[in-house]
Length: 135
Length: 135
DNA sequence: CCTGCACCTTCCCATGATGGTAAGGTCAAG
DNA sequence: CTTGACCTTACCATCATGGGAAGGTGCAGG
Image (cartoon, rainbow over all chains, first blue to last red; front, side, top):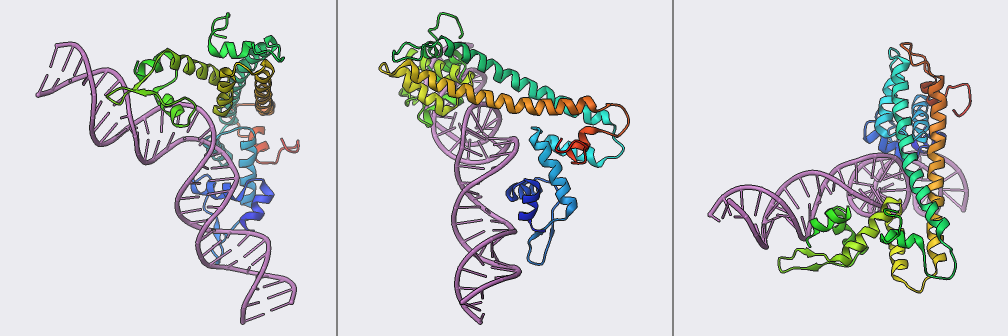
């Protein structure tokens, strides 16, 4: 099948399929006489794997490792679990950071009247002249 | 003061100060005869505002708006609050997405023995041959 | 046969926020 | 006069993705 069909089936855009090939995440596709890329069910399977990993927030390099682990029948499940756990830790850290931002901002908006008057603790905090130190 | 000193005082790198100037987030700094940029306490105040807004996750364009609101004595606190609330909503959405990833991945790692054997629900799920549908 | 249309190809550019580095100018202290 | 710390501009890189141009392929209909 052509790249567009593979894209439709996997949810990975044709643009990204070409990109993944360029960076060596997937092998160069077979070519027809027309020079069009030609994909089979094996390729679609691999692309599906990649998309699901992307959906879970794995980076390209992590996916590269996951693909190796997928193809390695000798590897232990502990290897996979370690990679996944590292990613969970990344996610937790990001979530924590965003949560701190959210909470700080929530406190400020709660303190802001939100009426027609100009006085606003949000702006005052950003300006550094809030009474509460850093925020 | 020179850009390095302004950077030290505000926690905004010299690189980023020049960048903010280039994209018009801050006005072009005064120059000495040496062509070195020269900053005063007003500039430092503005950069501090920007850094605090960045620390709360506001984008450059949102900060542009916040700076206008800061300088506008006529604006209502409702205007500021609305912008902040929109950003809180953004943060909540991101946190939700990351949380979903985290939870899905947690379920998979919990189901993975993590021992020397190769069988691994994480890889199987990514490969699309898990028994639970999408993940 | 020609035309149109849908699809493909490669190549270059853009995003957002930030960092790195190179080549060179300025300035004060030794 | 040299050294070192600082500054200047300019270009390139990141990460994952999309946009668009310029041109080739292939099929269906007039």
